[in-house]
Image (cartoon, rainbow, N blue to C red; front, side, top):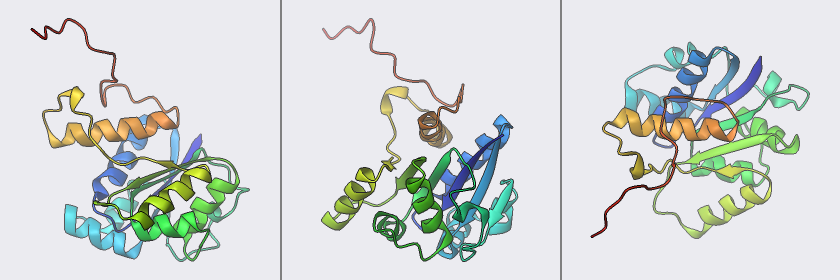
Length: 194
C-alpha cells in the first residue's frame, strides 16, 4: 500500500484537502496520513460546516499538529510524498525556511530531505514579493507549487467539476490514476475561427 500525507492549513479552500482524501479512499490502494492545523480546522468548520473529527474519519491515520513524535516526522517512514492543500502563506514560509515548529512543517521538511514529492496548494491572492520568494525557495528545494487555478478548456459545469479537475491534476503529479475526475488537454480540433 502506498502512503500519502495530506495536510490542511488555514488558507481558504479546505475542500481541496477533503476531496483529495475522498478520492484516495475511493481508490482504496493508498493509505492516507492526515494533519490539520488548528486554524485549518476552524476554516473547515467555517467553509464547509463540518468538524475536524469528520475529516479525520476520511483518513486512514490522523495526527495532532503538535505531535512531533509522529511517524510522518521521520524520513524512515516511507511515503509517496505529501500534499498541503490548502497551504497558508504562514505554512509555506515555514516549509521554505526549514522552520519545523509543528508536524505539518516537519513532515514537509522530511518529504523534501528524502527527495519525495511535496505538492503545495497555495490559496492567496494577490501575491506579494515575500510570497513569491518563498515559493521560489520551495521550488528550488524540490517542492511543487500548485495553485488551484481552474482550466476553463474543460468546460466545467459545476463547482464540483472545478474541484475535481484540480484534485485529479494534483494526483497526476504522483502518478495516481484518477480516471473520470477531469478531461486532460488533448488539443483543439475542428475549430472554425472564421
